[in-house]
Amino acid sequence: MTRVLSAAIMGLDARIIEVEVDLTSGLHIFNIVGLADKAVEEAKERVSAAIKNSELVPPRKKNQRLIVNLAPADIKKAGPAYDLPIALGYLLASKQISFSPENKLFVGELGLDGKVRSVNGILSSALLAKRKGIKIFFVPKDNAKEAALVKNLEVIPIESLAQAIAHLENRIIIKPQPATRIEEILGKNLYSINMAYIKGQETAKRAIEIAASGAHNLLMIGSPGSGKSLLAKAIPSILPKMTRDEILEVTKIHSIAGKLHYKLPIITQRPFRAPHHTASEASMIGGGAFSKPGEISLTHRGVLFLDEFPEFHRNLLESLRQPLEDGLVSISRAKASFVYPAKFILIAAMNPCPCGYLNHPTRACTCSAIQIRRYRQKISGPLLDRIDLHVEVPPLKYEKLASEKVAEDSAAIRKRVERARKIQKRRFEMAKLSFVTNSEMNIPEIKKYCQIDQFGKILLRNAVDKMNLSARGYHRVLKLARTIADLAEEEKISRNHIAEALQYRPKQEEY
Image (cartoon, rainbow, N blue to C red; front, side, top):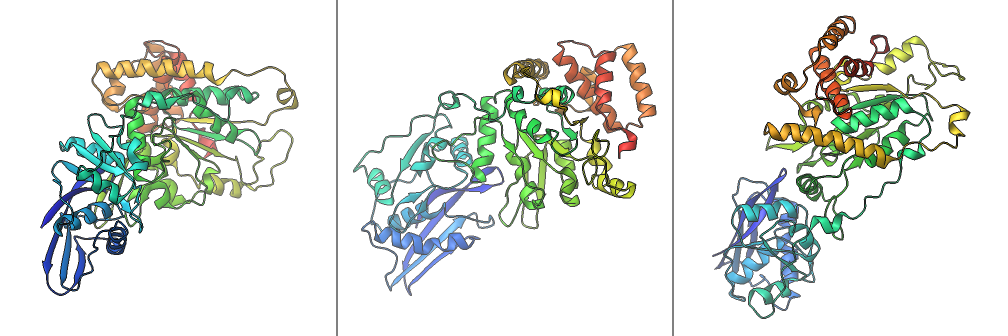
């Protein structure tokens, strides 16, 4: 019997899988056991053809009994990543090749011609190899740059089964993949939309700047054509660059979801995703037969833009409540439970009524009061309570649209956002806290860092009574005021900061 190591993806992390191959005499059989899915079962045909086309003897002898066990047997095995270790395990067991499998990890899909194809989740597997003290990681060539993000791990890029065997038997030497340096890949961030392109909308731009500075959620309400979508698409241009830890974290999520391109296997810009309002809960939250991250995890450390907010399915919107509060999503199924990170900025846009022209200066609204109420009630109060900034985006007049005056450039706004983020990061690092933005603060941190002056306390007390703020709403006002103070580079929250934070709360009569 032979044993070759591989890896299985479980949520965002990987686990060691021992590919045990037992070859004995008897009635011909080739079985793969160990809770394997259909893709793993079909490896029998891929492996046999790949071995034959590599000019070796495949497992087809009449008196050959071949059992492949993927251990531990209680973990569901999915996908084609076990093809390479199964083939090598069989060739070792049948004594057609000879090498030591110690301290080596293998993943890769085999084509019928013996070529090795890329697989998902390579970064998680590479991190597992380093964590377990495994020295050498054999990966498909297209996955090599991604695996080489992990330092102090020898990554061997292979193109075919025959090439892998030749290297293992020291007949040829494959040079290890050079370490992938994030700094060399970052390059220049290119954004399709700049804030300078957007005329007017100073109030909305201010709200967006605050949202970007503290990673707060934002809802824009305005008639069709007022610029809500354009404003949302310009937000990535003012967000600060990701840190190395954030890049690795986001890249790992996209790798598991199969969203990376082999030519650029690293996510260097903050994600911006805008799913259609017909999206399903599974696509948004994640899960499925073999759990994968959904849209909210793919936008981790980035922006999730939901246009036509009330048109999304009610159950889908309600499922956003936990991620918005906790920054993660728990997916529980009968066979397993997974937790994915989901710290994103929610940017939502909606019309004020079904026809879109309520309170429009030049067009009459055709909706009845019942239609307007029913439309707005599609979004529940608890969900609205988790959105920090509510801002109206009015239609622009001709004078604004035709003005030659150039609006403030995204680069200038981004400098202020980065400065505010640095203040927050320094504050939380000194306290040895794991989060980096004001929106992530919990009640103990709010009490410690959101100290307000006497005039601010009076204003906030009156607002709680008159605006019927919930406990969550009260704490969100404080976090928002903390961000506004950070933008002003002021240590203490003043009355003016509280007043600006309160003006972004929804008015009672609106919902």
